[in-house]
Amino acid sequence: MVAAVKFESFVKHLAWGVHDFELTTPPVHVCTVALTAAANAPAAATDEVLANLTPITYTNLSTRVLVTSASAEASGVFKLTITDLTISASGGAANPFQYICIYDETPASPVVDPLICYYDYGSDLTLQDGESLTLNFDDAGGFFTIT
Image (cartoon, rainbow, N blue to C red; front, side):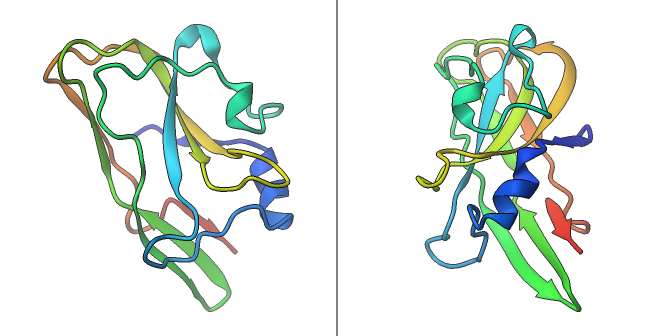
């Protein structure tokens, strides 16, 4: 998978205590994928919440909810690990998208649906009926680490 681009507000939201990535059942916070087309590129410096983006319509697409597989601190380093996600088109083609944005869908205050990062595939992708795309998150390095 291409390298992630962090939304700058993610750091601020961590400091404010907006996110809670503790691994519990059910998880404290749930991260979800938002897809946007090339014409609606996210802006890492200014976009803070999902409402700042223009997502595609998710007709014919499978779940976009991410599953946390590990959330731990060791020797002062926190690592969040996310299970790989396969997005599939079923019942017809999906709308084209270029950006895969990750957001925390749980917080309601002080911000709603804060953005974390996005992946830029360089041009619009269209999943045809029966096609899928696997988002392969780094198990060794984690989805992200805080040192």
